[in-house]
Image (cartoon, rainbow, N blue to C red; front, side, top):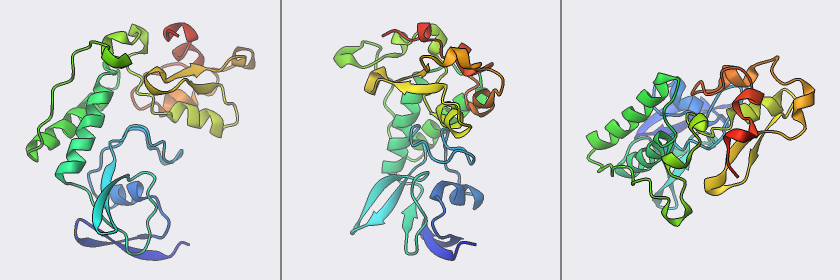
Length: 219
């Protein structure tokens, strides 16, 4: 059993297990921390960036992902501030660009993040027009059948966890995408449906092979 330690959250002490990831500890304690990519079975993916908190370190507050931050004695964090709301709102808008989502709770969560920012007095800029300037991938640049995937990585992580590795990330930056791995077709993907069970947006309805066919993503 891990040692119980005390951390400071929003100015109040909180007892947690030493080394425990901060996000599940905060959620268990009743703190309202938004998150989409984290799952208890898979751990942190650090992709949606909705779980941003601030850590007091070396005399100033620094932004950090709660899903990857381990609990340690003396840790002092805050879960709400103008900077936190601004970063969460930016992340929410980036995810909204991949709408529509089959799982309606996803859109509701993103709207709640933006509403919380506005309620805190943080100006939320409207999404930029889909111009593609500077090589940025706009909403209209997404293939129609690819909309609804937020690239959270849960499917890739669970596929690796069960020892199959049929799904993988390809490219990087604005070209980052999830793909059905080359050569995986002959291995019989589709029976376990583990990726479909853990997909937070319900983008994967059957299996990885049908959801991430290469033809859905332009080179």
